[in-house]
Figure 1 (cartoon, rainbow, N blue to C red):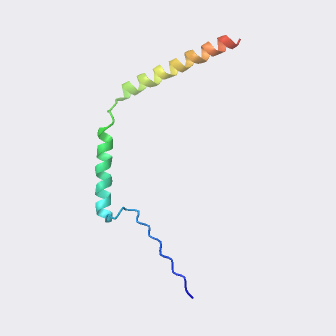
Figure 2 (cartoon, rainbow, N blue to C red):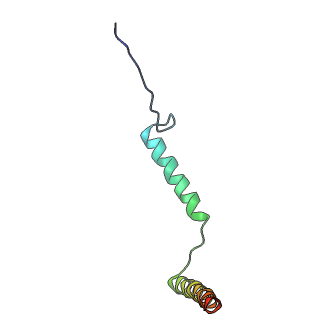
Figure 3 (tube, rainbow, N blue to C red):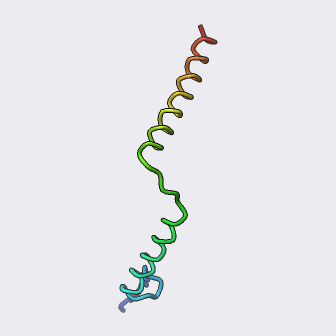
Length: 66
């Protein structure tokens, strides 16, 4: 007696590979539209201000502990 098991792995949701790739491209373009573009100067400012806030909190904690 033979046991036949057929597993269906439809990873593309019923789409052909080309259709799936086009859908992925469309979704990536929509995702890009949701995010604002930011330049290097703004990134540096945000990183610096974030680090300063963390340093102040750490200093205040250290002063309170000692």
